[in-house]
Length: 580
Image (cartoon, rainbow, N blue to C red):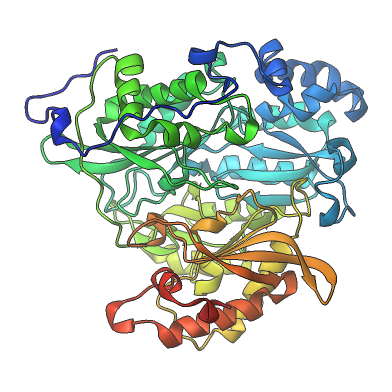
């Protein structure tokens, strides 16, 4: 591969770039399982089965053996490992309380049904595809459907006997579940308004399409240390939560090279949150797929494999530092230097795209929100019908559990909004409904300790009544998670709730630890950052509305309105008493 640089924008001499020492990895008494350092001999059981028979191979067994033999016929290693490569996880058996999550074995927690994740790169859907997903949910998934904060749709109650037929229907309309889960490149987040927004810098769709066509399902990337999350946006709102992805490309205009992308690497949350860092390079659109591939290969070859809790790219970046990571990318994987590039400007608008917005072709797109991403098969089918009745066949899912309908004529906008309201999808939601997301929770997830969707929904409905008269300056990002793993991004919310059991009057009840004052660029924050915790600050699961009302009221009383102080800014300067 050859990367061309120009005299107009040479890479700055090393002395002129910000001083960053190339760090030496921390010494370890044991090998970390880095293939290019320690060799490829597997150091744990998970790495053993991945090398013995890769995750992609299980599809044939699902279609020819397990679909006929049923759940009891599934090999345990396939069930708890390789099935994930095809978007399948066993769901939680009903009736097991959160206190037993960490004490039971997987086979004791799991039901004989699956969560199925439909992969939707860039969130791009047609009404035909949406209708197929809705039909699958209705026929095979007991009407379940959730819009996720990774732009996917998740279904539940799926039987292994039905999976081949589900694949047939999805693939007939250009969808699938390949590498929707597992130690692989997961779905690529893309701007929900790609190609249609009037203020877009560049349409990232060609870059997303090139990456997915070249590398998704590629055996050479099907055994990574752990999951690998990607994001690409060409919109100035930076609407793909790029700071918490392993690799992300954010549109930027270079003073001499034109519009391209700013490269970020090493983000991720869970129990050891870390925001991604800029490598300081400019990536031309034609090079995005190759640069993405280079970063993915660094993770494959140098990522830590011995311990699963250290097997994310963020840990490698923390040890190496930006300068060394850039050097390895350029010298070992690209074969040439990338030009230095500027940072993208701070967004001035939120990136959830809720509401009515004019497209560059004069038509409109309409962003609508369900409550905490929960929809249903019949709702999705009716939504497809509604969109077509208003002259469109295109819509998008978002990284904020929302849906965006494209290409609506101006004369049809209000009629569409009325129809969306009837489906529980509000284009003019309250600021608390707009800002609230929740993970799957204990209803289906084997890792969860606390329920999320139901408690968050009840809180939203209650807060809409309590806060109706309040003049909120912006949506309040309330993120509710059922365990410490942060699928709902609790550390980057105004108010993040981490599920755990809390003790009230000597009795353990479902509740949450509170994180306050986090935020990302796509939430219209001045600077991305992680929230703070207050020692001992916890709320019960049925006390969410009381706590949110209390802390938001305090914020409104104390904020510097003249300076436009946000909840994030206030939460980081407020004393602990004000946050309780």
